[in-house]
Image 1 (tube, rainbow, N blue to C red):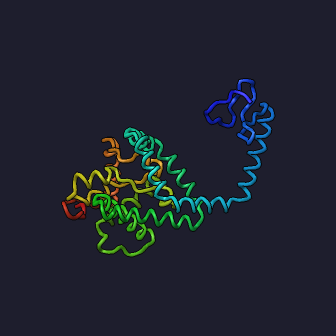
Image 2 (image 1 turned 135 degrees about the vertical axis):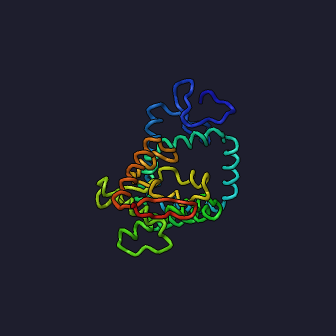
Image 3 (image 1 turned 120 degrees about the horizontal axis):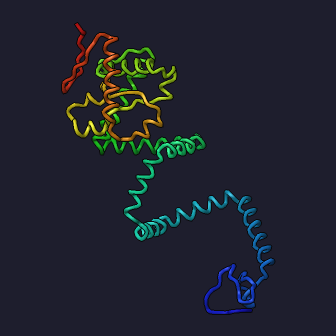
Length: 276
């Protein structure tokens, strides 16, 4: 025995004589040479791993049972730990990191979903839909932008499928015709609906917040274009440069010239007039 004290020892502590503490026994303490300690420790680790592999289901069920029996206590511990470790600046740093690594985050999420079973994937989608529905109910701006984004996608699918576009979607017909023309001009290929996304040059949220009475501007031809998902995610909610706006307006003017129309807008409707 060596260096005995009132403090409880931890496995792996080195004694004054170079031996290493292993455990307490009925006769006192067990100390091993470094070689013996490593050999015993390796055997114990291997034995524990082997037992875990042979009892995976039992371990899982025991964990679930413990969680159910101690849910309130676990929740209290987590909240207490969060109050001690919470740093307001961490939320800002997390947001900055997310916005600077959007593509990696998206790829990681896509890989995670691809590896899920069908049952777990269905549960994940159900949770996502529930959160979106709740936010749509409580956040008017989110509800507006989501509704307008879905409308133009729906009309685009109808147009590409050769189906009749309802009269209630006439306001989006011109934008869809422009997007189809733009895809052909930029030679995006036949599968551009799966390789590109509809981008709003002036962010939808900015227009909805600053021009609530001019919702038609959000999906107007002057404000929609094709971008790859990577380009769209990188852009985020940033405002475009004046050069980008001018270049897009030139494309819109070229499209109008091919159809022989001009587009004028007021607060409620987009009007089409033939060029004389």
